[in-house]
Length: 117
View 1 (cartoon, rainbow, N blue to C red):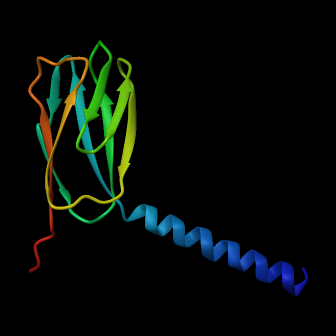
View 2: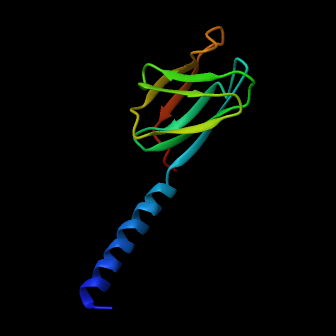
């Protein structure tokens, strides 16, 4: 293998292994929907950091994760799951709800700065 090809291979390896390491650092939070119920109703997430929400519909009817404040929505069929990556939130509270079950009270994300020891 010639030197330029070897150098290019090492550069790609370094680039992609760094991206994988960054992706592994994202905290993951799970929100479950089941026939008009949201569990948990309050999710504490880190402020000013990227994180991932796993959305699971364990019910028998479709649901729609909706948040006007986050400007996000995601429809899930019965038994389906998906995810949303939130890049960064200022500290505060952000409501979300199931747009297909409006009789369900809204839930919320609470973004907090990490507590230092």
